[in-house]
Image (tube, rainbow, N blue to C red; front, side, top):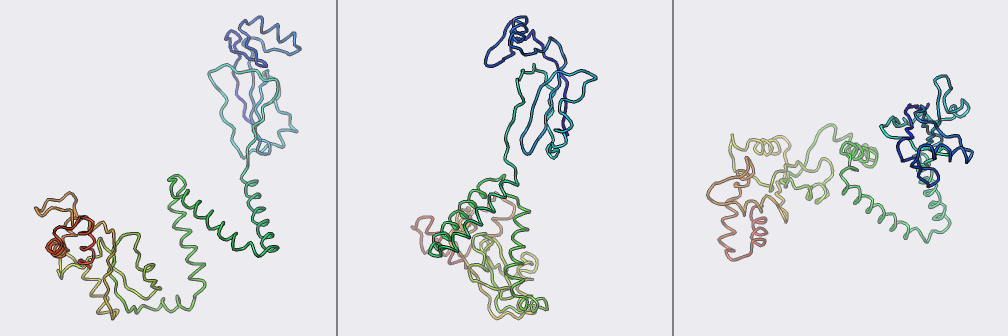
Length: 319
């Protein structure tokens, strides 16, 4: 329940401080403390330091010790110690400062913080039940605070837990969508018959399910860099070919849709790459060259346009 470490107070070292006074003479320090009615620690007398946590307070004390003497904390006090917090190691190669009394360091426990949070929520609920006209204002404030907390959390890499993010996302899906629409998901478990096949960019900002509000089972989606559909080739682009073949022959999709978007990094790269065939990556240049015909067309029609405008035109032409 508590940790003890033995060391020694060397009075030959001039750094004993008592009530703001420094005592540089060993004998003067010794007699001064005796005069004040304080029993000083003799040179080279072993001492014991004890540290423990009592109800989220950290207790540190210094006392002389003898080999046959009991621990510095009485049994009645030790029984009430919180042993959940491991005390730090107290052995140091430094002199120990004399302290007239134990030092208490307050700390705020997680239980207290959780209690305060729950109390705040209950107080808010009570207030809104009594004054309903405040609900709109309260909702706006809550949204603002939520946005600020999310921004702070995302900007601090230490605060982001990728595993927890995935878990919480799935839990939200299950509670808010899966559990609320069991008939739909029960039917989807038997098979799929989407009407759309969609080619979209891999860009994280343009998920087609969000942009077009697709529901589960509505669209068979292929995503790649710059939403490209390469020409038929049994060996080079087999992944895309297999997706088209499966969608048309087995799923019987009725519509194939290609979705482009603005500020596309793949198209910007395509417009930047030289024609001489030099590459700086293993895959990107070779992939976006699928849309070289679109680049050639844009440069021919908008030769004097600034680069951002060329990229915009190519985003449309490639789709």
